[in-house]
Length: 333
Length: 284
Image 1 (cartoon, each protein chain N blue to C red):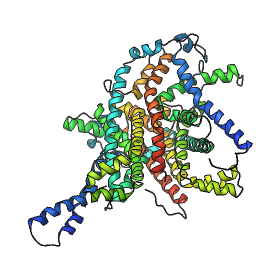
Image 2: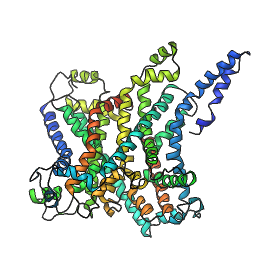
Image 3: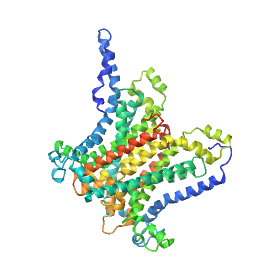
Image 4: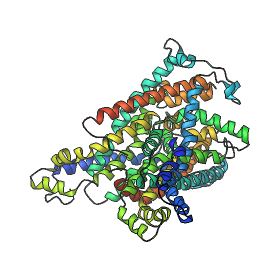
């Protein structure tokens, strides 16, 4: 990104040097120069914005994680005293409540992500494969399936919160009154069940994205492959196993990673379902850090936790890409 | 598979029917609850749950505008999401054009950096960005914190990485021969972008715009911190119904539906572009 502001003149100058004098040549230099710097000009707005909204804040956050940044220093955070690694020590100190809560939240988030990613991938892939072949009502069904993804997350989560109410909610009405599966009305948004509620809402909201991506990927599989397989006597299940699934490998690699990063960083779903403070079994890490920062106004510790989260995601992503690209050249981007 | 000479076996048809039916149920039940509850009188939603209204009413759809300043939230969301989308798409087009058509030092650094910002937890840069906006405001008087401008600036970068990535793929699929023909006709690079590449990439651009708008329309985390009473967007404003002493669930559902219908309708109308864009671009 830094190169965007340094390099543009170099290639242009080199091309303009050989040659004689004359006003035509100097005029000629400028379009050449412009051509060399054009890509940088085109990239400049994107680079500046990424710098302002992502990279500078990220560096600031790393800096803040070494400071004692409480509400007294918000107005002028450069004056906040340095704390060294104290914020990190507090965050990972498992003998104190702060560290224990963070660890608990981390575990909850890991289980939640694995579950949600697995289910979203499964539902999305199965639905896309079942709908690969045309049948009556396919277009309508596709629109239905994409609806949860299109709904704004807050509208979806509020509706689920309405359905998960203990006394008057639809879920308990079905489970207790209509099916008689349970004797007592359980709480869904408090206690252990809150994890189930959170997972259901997240899966409901996210699986259509997997569906969308796999559906698009399926259209790139050449028809001839299936025709050849059919001539060789392969049934449809075999075609799915031998042709469809292997063809989806490259896209699955990206899809699973994206789904993982989304669910791991998910803030919106728990925030709408539970508000500022989620119950411990559904206390996803983003909510936890949000609460430790904005509710208690301790930005230093919050930043340290965020940095730890980022480091974890970096390691997981790098490891994942390394493992999945074994034997294959990474020719993405 | 569509041209397979033999019809799929029964086991496949049964599995398909069962799976798709169950999945439709899972998807549709909340939608049904939302619609039916928004048409119920208040006593239906404050007592035991019932699937159908005891009497149909559209009163909730009138009341929602008075319980909270929904019209203002709506206007804020339209302005923020609309402007963020337009800017994000323009910026992404330029960036993707540069990457797909030129070789230059730093190209790889750029694409990798932009893509990896997708990975950052929003919470990591929420706090610093909040501090930066506050400090910019104190230093220059430009109010970013609490203003629509600050939110627009933030949101447009959220959709940039995906938009750039998708458009790079899409632009790359447009034959270079078209560019070269345009160059022979005397078009400069910028003219080529506007006359050749953009018209050929309309589906991809529409897809990216849909994505950008949805991202901005649905964002909660930054909206909850970066807005005040006058600039509040729907994502935060809708929670206002729940903080009333009595929650008017029929109004909550009516409001949820009202703010969802434009975006869902738009998405479903344009989804084929999204699929086409993904097929041609990102999902190689």
